[in-house]
Length: 340
Length: 263
Image 1 (cartoon, rainbow over the protein chains, first blue to last red):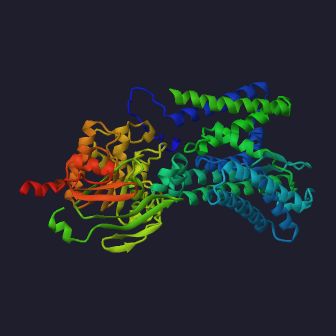
Image 2 (tube, helix red, strand yellow):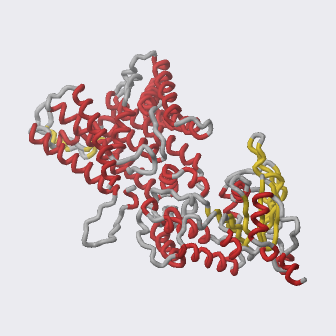
Image 3 (tube, one colour):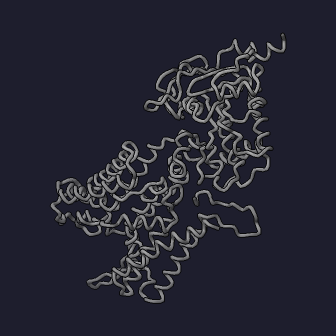
C-alpha cells in the first residue's frame, strides 16, 4: 500500500498520513522504543558489536519474511518455508559431501527451494487447493524428505568454505598487536546482512517498479478483476510462491553455513516468525497490502526483542509470549487505523 | 440501422453461440451482429443469458459451440487478453477494479506503460490518466488514493476510461449507469453518442428502457438463453420490448412501427 503513498498532499496545512505510512511509522516508533528501553537496561546492548549480532540474527527471518510478504500480498500464505529451508540446506550439504564445490552446491540448494515453491504454486493455481492446505502439505513433505535423506542425523565436517557465507564479513578491520589475539577494530558487516540488504532492495524494486510486482498487488486486491484485465493471475501466483521457496532455500543455506553443519530438523516454526514479521510490518492476510520496508521493520522488531530479552536474562518461553502479544497488538493497531 | 451500415462488414458476428453449465443451457444458439457506429441494446431478464453472451465476447468465458467473427474474420477468443487485442473492451457491471491500487494503476492494469528498461513508467501513466479523466470528469482529484476510497461515480469513470483509452473498436457496456447519479448518467449518454460518431460499435446491456430508447439504434432481446428478437429501435415501442422480455414474443397485432406510420 505504501507503494502509492508518495505525496498525497490534498490539504497542505494538515499533516495527512496515508494508511500505509501511518502503520509503518507506528512500527518504526515501536522499534525505536524497544532499542531505547533495552539500551537503558543493558549497556552492552547499544554497541556496534551487538548491533551487528542483531543484524546477523535477523537476516534469516528477514529473507523468509521477504518471500512471505510477496505471497501474502497475493492473498495467500506459505507455511512451508521453515521445512523448505531445512530441505534446501540438506540438499546443499549432501551435494558438498558428494564432492560438488560449495558454490554450485548452494545454487542447487536454492534451486531445490524454488522447485518446492513452484510446486506450491502449481497445486494452488492448477489443482485449486487453498494456499493454507497446499503449503501445509509441502511443509510436511519437505521436512519428511530432509529427514529421510539424512536419517535425521546432522551432516558435519563440510569444510571451511561451507561456513564462509554465514560467518564471513566485509570490511573487517584487524589491528596487529603482536600478541596471540589480534585486536579487532571493526568486526565487519556479516555477509548474511549484506545478502539481506541486496535481496530486500531487489524485492522492493520488483514490487514497486516492475509489472510483475504491480500484478502481485492487483491479484491480491481483486483476483477476478485482474483476470478480466488480462493479468495472468495463475502465473503471477506461481511466480510469488517460487520466489518465496527460493528465498527459503537461500536462508537455509545462510543458516546451515552459519552453523557449518546441516541440521535437517532446523527451522521448525520459522514460517510463523516470517508471517509475524510481515504482519507487524503492515501486510494484510486478505491480500493487496504489504511492502518490503514494513516487513524489514517487523523482522527487526522480532530480532531486537529476542536479543534484548536474551541479554536481560528473560527466558525463551516468555519471549514467545511477548512476541505473541506484539503480533496481536500490531494487527489491532492496524484495524483501529482502518476504522478512522 | 441505416442501409449504408448494413452493407458494410459487421464489426462482430457471433454465430450460433451455445454455452451450457451441466444440463442448463445459459446461451442457446444465439447469433448477434454489430456494425461500426451502431449502438445495440442487449435486453432481457436477469438470467436470460445476456451477461453470459457478453462474457463470451470479452473472453471471460469460453463457449461450447459457435464461432465469432471480427471484421469478417473468424477468430478464437480464449481469454480477456485475446479479446482486448482485437479491440474489444468491456465495462463490467462490477467495474472490475483492484481496490488497493490507485487510478493510474487500475487504468493501465494488464497493459502497464514501461520505460526503456522495462520498468513501470508511473509518471507517464499518471499524466495520461489525468489527460483522459479530464475528458470524462473535469474535477477529478486524488488520483493517488486507492480507488476503494473514491465515490461510486468516480470509480465508474475509471472503469470507463480504462475501456476507451486503448484504441477501442467494440465496446461492451454492462449496466454502465446502474451506480450513477443523473448528471453522470447524462455524461455516459454523451460519451456513447460521441463514440458512436467515431465509428465504434457498442453493445449496451441495460435494464433502463429510457436509456435504451435514447441511445440505441437497435435492440436484441434475450429470453431463456435464446435470441427472441432483433429490431431497429424505430420499429418497436417500450411495450413491444417489454413483451419480448417477459413473454419472449411480440404482441399478436404487431407490425413494424415505422411502417405503421407510413401507411
